[in-house]
Length: 226
Image (cartoon, rainbow, N blue to C red; front, side):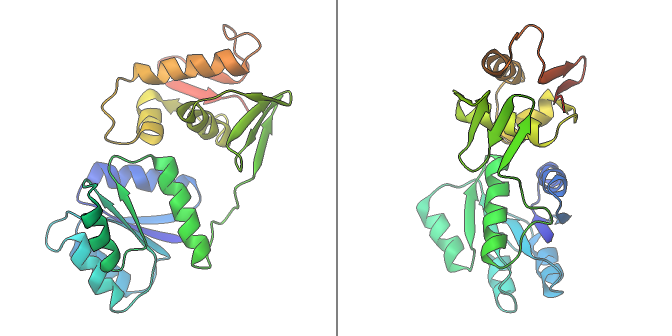
């Protein structure tokens, strides 16, 4: 499946591209509405993620132009959270709407839902359950179990554990984890990641001081032992 990401914030485009490519999608990024319309005209994309506020023509105008020749699913991104702005986006033909800052895991879930609704899908269907050692992650119910017993995780702890378990042995820096789990515009301290990792270890590890699952790559970040 091929996705077009449109935003004048190049760092944001790069981050979304990185995360979606990791899910098996082919992603192309551009930085203005005019380029988005021209690329969409070729019909090569299965979904478009597009910001509202952009140079040349904004996302709303670009969305209306694309709707003249294509029914490709479109997710609009904006820093505005007013319901009027959302209604304008839907009136222009958008299928979904997300307000910045957003959780990248939620964006990926919305991408999957829209592609499924449109008759597409990811190249590899996500497993409903991931089991590593005594730990099982139920992605359908959003719960983790250790030895069959439910682990009491907060929403952010679950999101962090899910990311690490889905990509075992992959090392993530604190910055990457902050960007992916908390959102690209989250203003918190990177130590937030350390605190959440410590709390997860206390809940899933036999001995948190000598973890078996979430390991530290000193000077780099964290990874899940596969």
